[in-house]
Length: 340
Image 1 (cartoon, rainbow, N blue to C red):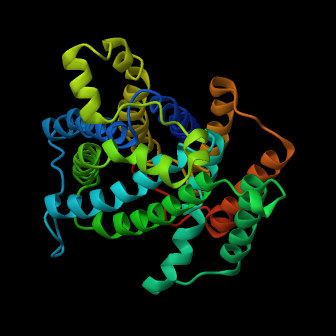
Image 2 (cartoon, rainbow, N blue to C red):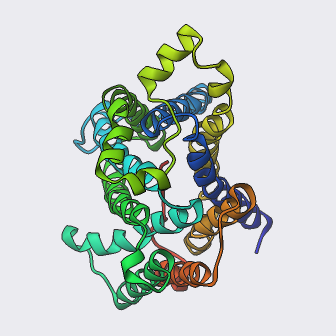
């Protein structure tokens, strides 16, 4: 392996690590800020963090591709991608309230398997490795969530699995839109729309969300993270002094990590690395995101890591890799891209 390829692989490993530990930030940040507000702030930060890179490319004479081939405008394409991204991260953030960071990291990785399966509806062929990989990931999900007892499935895992479905739709949507819109413009735009949608939801939904869950299922309410203030209550409390500024300050590190780290820095590293990394390397390394999420959950959040959980992790990681067998074996083809 040449030095350039090795450097690209190390950057992808760092990207996977940042994304994995991002699940820890998402979970810990909700101790102080509501789920919609957290997503809104972090995606606005992520969008803003890409602007210097866009300006740098323009200053260097690398004009960004606006739109070609009769596609929609960058603003409209960003709106479509941002809407799908908003749904995906909303379910993901909701699921994280009831499950561990490690579980959320691996279950979100289901989109790696779902993308080729959903591709059938777009006329794309799905080979045997995909079906074998799907079987492995479903087995892993059972071990991970039910721990050998079907009646004890964690509802947070199911909610996160729903988010994986929308992540898969988002990947397929991006695959089409990126053909007519520059990736950097599309990413910054979709992050901005997602952040805007999330802040609107924070104002409209968060004041009633915790109370609704408590009414529907008191046990579920007690098991999740609902100590946060809704965005309207947080704004009112901070302005009146009834909520100390330190409450918001404690959420600053998770918010900055989730916005600037997971979105801005990691995305940029991925774009730089995949210019020189073989798709096989990228596929394997980026699939390690769930492993880093599990490690971060154990080290920073003291999450349990039992035999069933480890077995589930192994099956799910194996399923993801098997699904990508044609890319891994051939060393060529499409690249796995995650925006967010």
